[in-house]
Length: 112
Length: 112
DNA sequence: AGAAGTACGCACCTTGAGGTAAGCTATCGC
DNA sequence: GCGATAGCTTACCTCAAGGTGCGTACTTCT
Image (cartoon, rainbow over all chains, first blue to last red; front, side, top):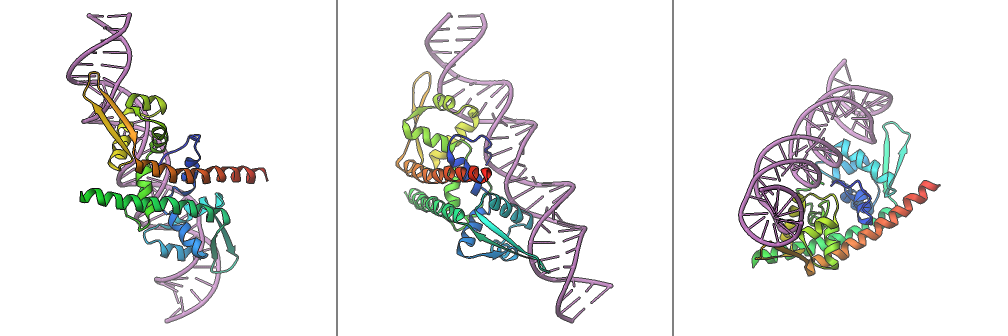
């Protein structure tokens, strides 16, 4: 989606934070427990390393998740959810419920 | 956003329905009262006629709004919200509230 | 006669998110 | 020495959403 103008409405801001292709999945996984970079990569089959880094960085900038790098060799990085991320997850859940509702509605219409 | 895979989660389905650039605004306006095509065009400065038609059609196909064409000259078409569209508007409002919350959070962080 | 309004359809172009492939630093196993 | 692993970065390419502009059938206003 392409939203630059603040759009008066806060929905645009929310989409800005969650609008990436993998962000909802990341939020969901991290809401269960912290994960390392390579673990997340394995959890989301099909994501490229570039985009994964990108979206994790954006979510960190938005305060949804936090990143801890351990100065070791080989490198180790852990991502975990923040309280703000947790609250977004709740909002997403509401939308998700509507999505399910909508899907059943669609299949019912199809049957008719 | 580009989501083709159903993604197991219903959030993708919801985004599919509301993901267009103008759909949230359309939903909001139509939740107040029905409008004609040209009225909507005036309400959303910057939207092109092509895209407006496109998004209205998609929302109609998703059952969010209904279209009534009067066989008059000059042509007259009225768009109004459906109960399903109304329920989506509620879900959007939740996300929107989070968006506002997030914006205040961001400005607070900036101040620090 | 000419302009403007109504509700579109069609052809073309731009733009940015996401995908692909390679490289990089350093260590461990064979 | 060769490859694998970890967590990235960089350069390039693709593709669909959205924007631009024109055409249309008919009428009413000036």
